[in-house]
Amino acid sequence: MLVVETIGRIRRERLVKGKSIKGIARDLKLSRNTVRKVLRSGSTSFEYVRSVQPRPKLGLWHAEVVARGAASTSPKDTHYGMREIVVTTVDGHRIVFGQEVRKPTP
Image (cartoon, rainbow, N blue to C red; front, side, top):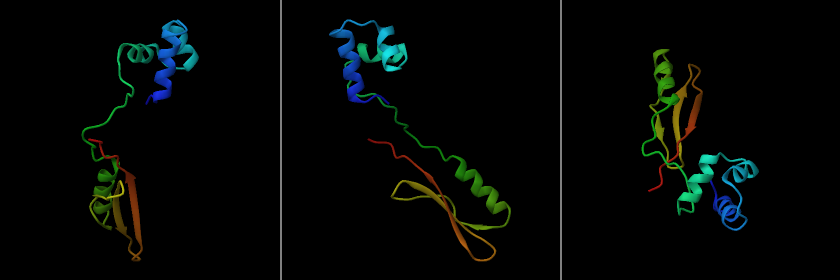
């Protein structure tokens, strides 16, 4: 993700100092395509946001735990950005497994 300061520096290097795209990319340790993208667009921030967060590894792991006979809750998304499973062992101990889930920004 490019921050505003980096975008500003790329534009200053090109427009004020007259540096080449290759030179800017080398100095800032960015790809030439990234430097071109910044120079061609008028945006001040570039970031990628997923529209849908797939249920990753935790969901598959839940099926395996249940298949082996352990008592387990289904994966639930919490209000603080985690997807959690609570597994109860044979001895009655509860173990919570969690995975960070990013919510897409509107």
